[in-house]
Length: 375
Image (cartoon, rainbow, N blue to C red; front, top):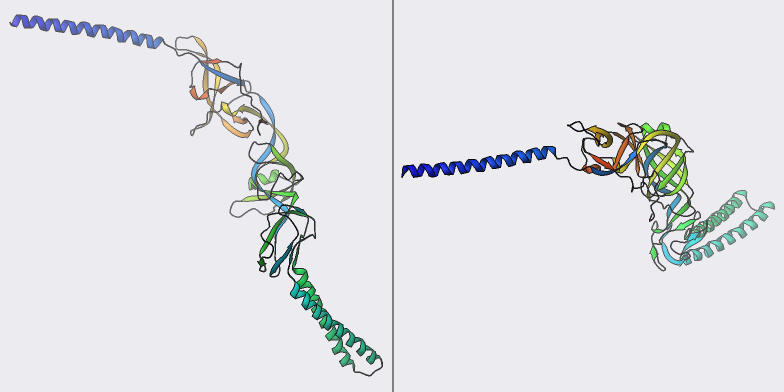
């Protein structure tokens, strides 16, 4: 019995040893195959870094303001008798916009004119008597004062009637009217906004460190958004001599012709100031930049060697210092040199030492001044 049990155990141990040896051989074969495996090269597109001349510019965010703009309001209380304009219409300087009911003032004017005419008649009679020395000088002076008082009352009533007529103080475009026919308005109630849209101002602020590069007369372009097609071009006309105490920024004002009315008061715009000089920079497409919290980098295509000494085309990650952006391009201030081949697409799947296959048959266009078809 014991002999048979030992024989069974010997068979089981031999079987397990054979299985373990087979598995060991399989694992060693797999390890050897893994060491010899190399992933296929990643297809990428590249561009050769070359210097370009970029016009020095200063970017900021500004707001459009009218050269002349006001919200017209009622000077005296009254009922709206006539409205002589349409919302959004162009008006000329001095044009009557709203007439308030002035019947009471006109009645007061008739009464004041009657008193003035009577005072004038008394003055004429007193003057004749004074020339004949039939009245005292003091009596004549009193009659003359009454006449001047009556005339002042007439002018006062006329001024009140004139103040019930709201006129355009300058030529411009009206906004949406805020009164209706027959409505009672109090003194100071808004009637309608009036804006002069040509020309317009664009106000923006720049840090105090950059003010020295600005001067009046420099060209300024504005767009609805960064990189969008410009809405207009103007000139710097004023630079505030005092910096803001809170932000240490200096306010700058540019004047723009706005005959096409593309710029509206209150609109926020992206501002670019042409500083009038050019700088040589190495520009790359923004798709070539691997943005990361620890630093931005690019991948440079070079001839590398594998551990077994074979040469292949691979990439090396290089950290770079970025400058300003223009359209699809970004300036590289440090980290690469002109003439190096830089990966422009597929950077997210690369690592240092990875093999690549350059295929520039189809490349995305990159320009410092792109013109999208649907913009």
